[in-house]
Length: 230
Figure: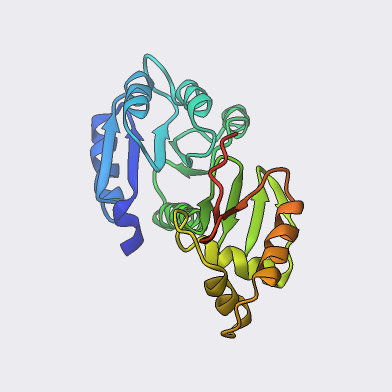
């Protein structure tokens, strides 16, 4: 899978033979694989490097997989964690469920389950990254979702009219630019008439929906995104 080449994974396993075998299998999916021999080393590497996915065994010396996952979740609640384990006992699964585990692969490996679990994890990760690339951070308070044309004030969705959405789509093309009334007029209404009052009213109506002024006027020039700090 071409998209998986940029995904960096951490794989934690104390058994040398199992680790070497599994790394060979993981190389069918990933090019960036970092290994650790137990939970202590795994946690240390997680703290010092960025990883997109964590694969780990459960039963390891020094610090087992569950202990490591618990500490990882204190640092990052969202990183996908997949468990490789020979255990199928209920108590182990209940403990790991509480840590938000994304999947299990039982030992000895079943190739179909191995492939299905990893492909599902990759697909979810890529989908999430694609969604994140659509989100533009306008300032400390406001975000704009390009794909959905959704403005958020912190986590609250602000309902916009069609023309207000068009205005936002123009403004986010360059967060540092100041757009003239003529540019806005032409983009939204597709005519050459420069109607400052119409644009002034549009900006005013949008700003009135918000706790802070998002689009500010630059005297004699036009309008720009305000640099608000929370």
